[in-house]
Image (spheres, rainbow, N blue to C red):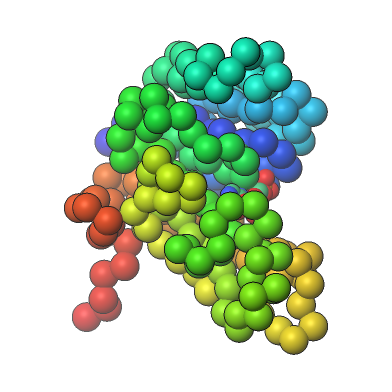
Length: 207
Ligand code: GAR
């Protein structure tokens, strides 16, 4: 099977992007990162892309008159990479519906909460403030709503009495990287199947 072309969307640090790139580079994932689209010119992920020798495109919202024009520019850039898969990796924007319709069941996102709880920004802070005792991360296909779409995998971590947003974020992040890599590997092996809200192919019961 030929390698899947993976396009990363990121807004900041890029540690999930690094995990995906590393897993492609060492052969864990049958894919290659072909580009990075970033909405902040000073994002750390751009330095990573340069180190990998992968092209990046910066598209900042402030350079466009409205969201429709911004979404159009994003779609045009995305299509130019002819990706098989788009991975949102710390991309802090809601994707335009034009992108979602252009790449049905081909856009993944990682969110630092056990969805459908704690959508949106500062999910780890929301979890600490809500007093939940279990938190975690979710990898899902991207739907048209905020942090919405068919769930592929989730990993839970404990929340301790003395946790802060920072300590909980660090515990979740440790699980995000392997969870995202396992999901991208399954996608690239054509192992995932979507039926309505349900995704199969990653969580078969051991016999
Ligand atoms: C990660 O914790 C990711 O789950 C979260 O942003 C962080 C990005 O870190 N994403 C969201 O909150 C999306 N709603 P990274 O840039 O080091 O991968």
